[in-house]
Length: 418
Image: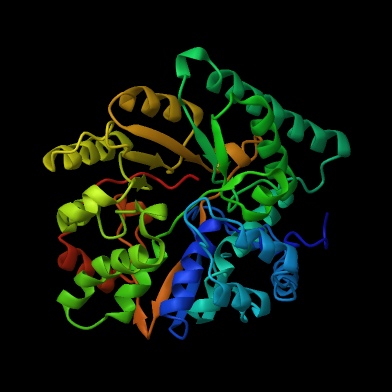
């Protein structure tokens, strides 16, 4: 409802914000960064559809929230990825943390201008919180003027579509297919995400639903919180190490070294596409390929990516099936793509699926591709190249420089619909 807080807990956040947050707190707490909101659905002037005053109020409400003792107790017990995963100094930091101020206005083209400057140790948490708020306000705007009955029909359509997904997921032909909820940032609403997660927990086959990326949702449903890291880490490290081209190139390996030092094998999932997967694979050592668990796919052709991963393991004499390696696919998934990828790779490498928008916002309404990305660190502009040029972010001159540094020659483009 209008004027009701969308976010009521700082744990209504994706788990990877906490795993990254601890590394940032331990190693780079005072680095100054800025995050920027981007509407990749450029044909929708978002400021013409949502109330900017309400958006401001919702963001200001988040600044009043604090992590409470029950939430800290839960995080202390989150040891599925390693003993005492969250260290006590970090938990005490979370207890006292207040999110920093933000900048919000509208642009002449009707787009929302939103920036989050401040110390990296605190402004990093704005990402999924602000996205959840903005996306839910967009969804509400599409229902303005509808009667109660019409609103109920939208909910019913969502149930119908969810039921159709369950039929396909539980088909015996799809035995072994596993999914996780990655839909916090672009959900229809918090209420709907909770409903979807509860339904998947009750209706899918044993072991088929692995968990949810949303920490509060995992707490409420007794599920495993899912997630590791995001493009933010290599992007900001390039700003911290922004000297010569060689130093920028070396920042990719610095991220891997930092991550392994803090989490070791427990959270060792590569995210290779920040500056292009081809560079990333060439830059890996044999020890890393052998030691890390697997990869997450987030851009580019998923079958081509999976074949490259299998080839990489084979080059190092590793059978990915017997070695327990796996791929988590998480880019723009729908049920048909999930089943296609599952069937293509089964018996060759383990695969799982982090399902986002099409799981938590498939209600017959239009969905937008909204992101918040690291924009600047230590006074330097940041870049994400991606394996899909439509996902690239950064200033044009910086993008061209980073393409040269990382040997990025990808020409693949796919419109960012969700």
